Image 1 (tube, rainbow, N blue to C red):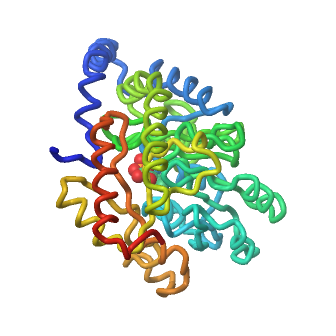
Image 2: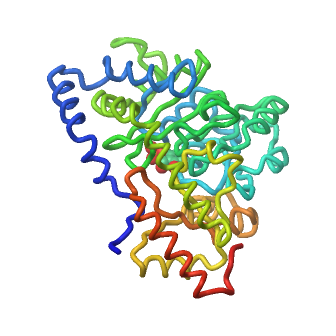
Length: 373
Ligand SMILES: Cc1ncc(COP(=O)(O)O)c(C=O)c1O
């Protein structure tokens, strides 16, 4: 069998090529490349998709979260709680405001352990950023209860979870606001960087509308110091095309995940889902005892895998000043040694999924002592 890539963006491009090129011509001829109708339409459509009142296209998913924190007036002297098991951007958005990052450990589902949060809350805590990791929804019921009891905001990092459902509602609609990423690797992806803020709060919507555009109220008057973080008109137009296909893309991710779960549950620890319908499985993360050996075996067999994420954020060089030590977040650190992401993307063929499973089964047949975690 040929190689099974972890992801192939080229495969998807060819499916969309004609409509994207037609859109490029249309936007090109319109002469409107920043703001305009395509962006406004995309914002309406994505708000409707997420079940929120408002959506704003911004420069990327990191900015989406950062601008929410800025809209909440979070800055030096404040504390924001999040997880260390995430992409670096989750913590960077806190650092960028000047607030202090407080990490909380994760549960077996790789999401924030809601039982640990209140121990980390102080008078300075202004917000909690749960990450719906790999598309798997965090425990929003517990999070919102904690937020209410302690008068802090929940800002959902939904970068990996567009379309995931928690108790019948789309993620992104639970906190005060949420940030999504439209990065090429995400389930809803564009052809460069992009992000979206969704919220039900008019004050956040109004403030970010200014913040993303230099703080301008209109062309000539500036209300506050802002940023230049807008979703390009062309990328918004592309995102509209992709959004129409998102339910199909997510369905395919779920189908592949279901197949992996059914085939591998007796060999490795499969993702902890309340229900397979909840997650859009941006990634499919298993846990195994001898991750290194399995990963090498799969690589030799032509199966590309990744680790999301091998070094927790609290142990990164950039976090040194936060004074965390190895052992401070034991469940996060333990998970980082065991997790392995298998290939999953909408264009992954059945025969390729079957090959991945076949190879993992062979690995455990040949290494009977290893077993799952
Ligand atoms: C969990 C998480 N948060 C935030 C981001 C930041 O998104 P972006 O890369 O669009 O800035 C990402 C994207 O990689 C992510 O995976």
